[in-house]
Image (cartoon, rainbow, N blue to C red; front, side, top):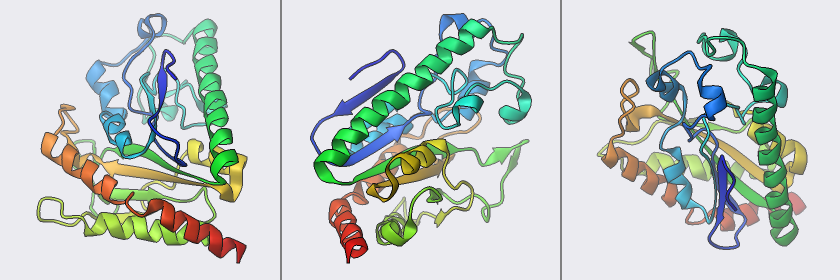
Length: 264
């Protein structure tokens, strides 16, 4: 299912979705004339290449528009960056964005959540549950300083928008699987709710479906690329994709154990 700014690919019918809603860099022509920052500045705050990792799931949701056009990981009233406070101190627009452009962006936002709900309704009706990998990346360099590793794990697993009493076993196994993967002779630093706890997307899924969904925000530090230039490291990209794939081997078996424990 293809739209102008996002796609939903379903290669098989299984209750597992990988999403990359900040993957995109595109801007509508109408909005690009107002943008106040360079492509490189914009790319730095986006999550480039995350869409490539969605292949680990049979259902992939990838967004191609920039979060600076409309941010799907924020509530609707905050989905358009208006002031520098909304966007890491960045003055996004040369001039105030016209209302007609805001309307177009919010229509995209509404279409995305409408289509996502249709998809999840079908999955829940057929399987009774759904697992979502909500893939993001984040910068560890700010103001030309590398952030302390204490506060910047390689992988941050955000679980604030789920019932951990139900899904805790699956989350613990996900963390252990990632930690045990050999990443160029080192182990990944994987921790939970350190840098990020999950954004609006996972919140919305939990509000809609409760314990029937396990929405996991997976924030990857940009160790797989040069944060400043935006250039990827192909080897690290491939290896992390393999690490992510490794976590899916017993995913549904673990999910069913979680749900069975809830019933018991």
